[in-house]
Amino acid sequence: MRGMPVEKVAVLLVHGIGEQKRFEHLEGETRKIVEAILADYGARRRDVTITLRTAAGDAYRGEQSSWVSGADAPLHALVELPAKIVDIAFHEVWWADVNEALTLGKQVRFWLWGLSLAGITTYNVPVLPGALAATRLPDQAGKLTCWHRARMAFVGILFGFSAFSIALVNLILKRLESSPLPLTNVMVNYLSAVKLYNQTKRAGGSPMDGPDEPPRVAVRRRMIRAMIDIATGDCDRWYILAHSLGSVVAWNGLMETGEALPNYLDEARWNAPAMAPLRGTTAAPFNVTAMMPNRPVWLGAQEIVDRNALFAKFRGILTYGAPLERFCALWATEIPINCNEDVFAADTEWINVYDPSDPVGTWLANFNPSPTVVPGPGKGVLKPRNFACRASPVLLLSHICYLSASRASSLRTVNDQQHLLVHQVAQWLVDGDSLAGRLDAAPKTARTFWMPFAANGGPSVRMRLRAYWRFLQAGIAAAILTVLTLLSLHYVVYPLIKLIWDWVARVLSS
Amino acid sequence: MSYLLEALWLWALTAGVVLAASVIHYVIASARLRELHEHLEEQKLMQQPRERPPRPA
Image (cartoon, rainbow over all chains, first blue to last red; front, side, top):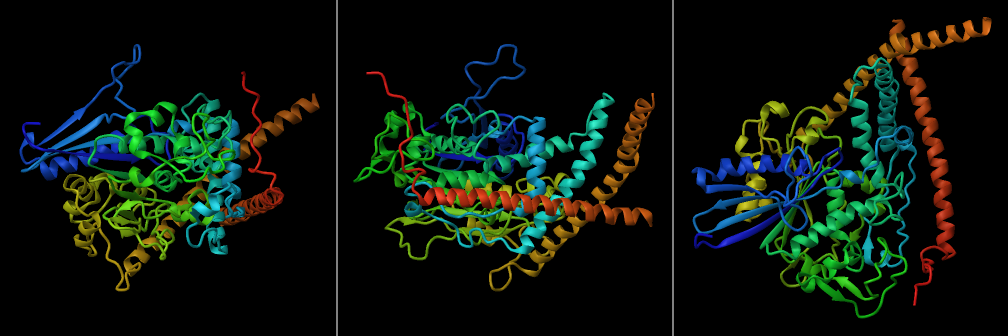
């Protein structure tokens, strides 16, 4: 490329809960990163080139051109530096279509699940043969206190209020042929992705590449195939950016055992010449009769994916708004840690960013590597580095504003735009240095995006106050929902009951 | 005032529903887990090859 060396970088974006259409999350998040790259490296217009590759075939009478998918990245950002050109390829793990279709049955099951979640039981014994030896659970797995259950019950009550107020109002609006408020459907579809990840079956059956497997296996399959596509490509380094529930998907991909990894692939991928460095065998056959996912017939009892080779060029993962600690308490067996921990390069980073006002994302304390693991030469382990930030002061908005640079849309009042997460990520991807080093060096005061730690390295007073602010906002939301429910009862439910009662009385009397 | 009392009544009622649903959830899930545990102890689960139809020669 114009006689300059080109460094190829791949980025894998994993979306969380939601109703994202294909490429929607990729476009939304990449737009923010690309705008930061343009701001940081595009002093001259020609310094940064953004390319979009559309697919060879489009849908007949489709409204838009499709983008390339599979092993190819649709979006590239080429940044010209003094000594080289950095070609950043953005890939997406898209799994929103695995979610169940919105039906009445799904709504009923969802409300029952939401109302009764406080009564969840925890069971932390892996059932698959070999899982006990190959994986371990996070620290404090399944530790659910009465306080945790009380908080879940509080959320359950809010669920109940929304079910009996907004849902009912929507029902009436539908009957009146008016547009229903989308809030309930959106909430059901968003949060049901969490439920789906814990289901053993999907209504109507799991996707056809694993019809007898839990739907989460289909989600993991998307993740692992994307990882394999990148690792077998020609990139020099690659990264994962995982938001919300996507961090659980990404974690599953990173921690899947070498024995099970081939099971996620199709025959063509497994036999591809580029896959050769990743193919490995074990000294002795292992039990392939009971694996998750099922062992394909084209694989024997010794074939594995060499995780050392898979992660040879992997340089880091960024989790933001990650509910991994929530899963650790509620569904710990779904986020096991692979005991073969030192398969990563020594400079591989795990950065976890969270806003204390975010009810989903948290500080990670239970995913540290085993203290007994001594990495081999040039090898390292994944250890989360936590950084608290001020994504947005508004409940729930804080969960979706981590990469946002807009003050208006995030209602953020910080005064250091140049240190926002999105700029740090853009520079991390372009320069390839340490993101933790960048975040350590970023200013942390009362008015900055990044929050200061306490002297002992733990959560500071400001972080605790921001978490209390979250609880206060939850209380305000509860009060608003209570008022809505009361209004709904007075102006919708009671008159409706009276109407039905009068009609029944009239019918009976006549 | 009546609205406040009604709100309190609403909260108490919904909390009761949530508590009852949670207890039912706990009882059913515990029973299922106990069943699974017994099943595993007997080594009936996961140790047997899944039955497949015989392949054509």
